[in-house]
Length: 408
Ligand code: TYD
Image (cartoon, rainbow, N blue to C red; front, side, top):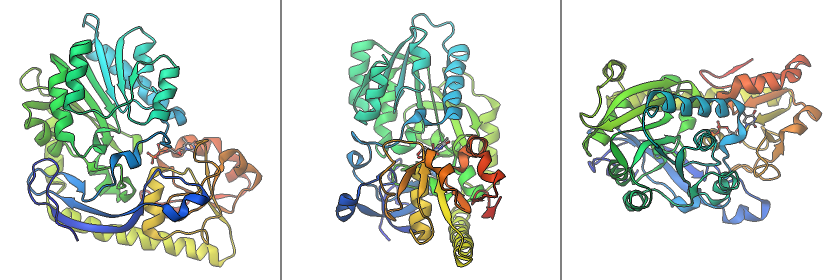
């Protein structure tokens, strides 16, 4: 295992485990690309100083976020509603009384969140490095720059547009290894009484439910309130509220302000206490997590092998980024899954990263119902089950692995 210094505080981290050789989680590929597929050793570490859970190695950012990025925020209806509510929350609770507010979103993807500001004529700017998804936003009239955010871009934004009243990000901050520079950028970007609000998968949920599939190349970090407080304190900013979310199998939304600018809500202290009591700040918790990952892997593989030994068919459902970790860590192959059904056009007709399982348009599912469907999109369970009621009505069974491996 490699030696690794923390991205946040530069202390040497404690290495936890390796998930083995992993491909790019969103790197869906064509047959002719198989021979050049990129792999890296996916190891995770815990920093005993700032308590940040992090990847040790990460592919170059352009290898993950580029003109053929496969993740479009707008693919889930429920997520669309979630972003609308998030935008309304900022509007009514934080910038309602601000004159001519300016909202900046980093990782603005296809504009699923910013459109709720743009539609109301609110000044906004999206920062999105993946050109193809950014183009969807631009085509819909959302002001977007195709760049990576860092301190120097933040300074350019301030000189061109002025300071921001709200900085927003959803499932983006945990993607950024040079996050210190981004936080410096947020510090430079935000008005004295501005707020930064962002949400990401929550470490507490990952540990509690053993959702190790939240660990993949793009997720440099899994945040806790403790580690986020440490990160922002370095730049004279602080967490003033936290709001747990059900999205992505359990996320946390952090509200940040310049230090002393706004009162700190009691939720922050409560959550910090929860993290201490539940052991999120102790290394031993992560040793237990490592053992749990091994158990989940063997439980899932025993179930799949057992079903296959009865001559039954299994297909995957939703080719999520998270599924890349499950498939490659558990060694799921085309012997187990006939294909994976998915709604994203750019993934259809391609093959899953690493294991090369064919990805098929979800419309085909009803023409070829398998005996079992392995639900990789468990965080969209309600939406998917409602859409695929007929599969169950005609005797199909779902396999899930969150919060435990079971057949529904
Ligand atoms: P998500 O959990 O948001 O992805 P990730 O793990 O990549 O963050 O799921 C997005 C994927 O799920 C995307 O490939 C589309 C697919 N999906 C379906 O196939 N059907 C559905 O009904 C939904 C909601 C998503």
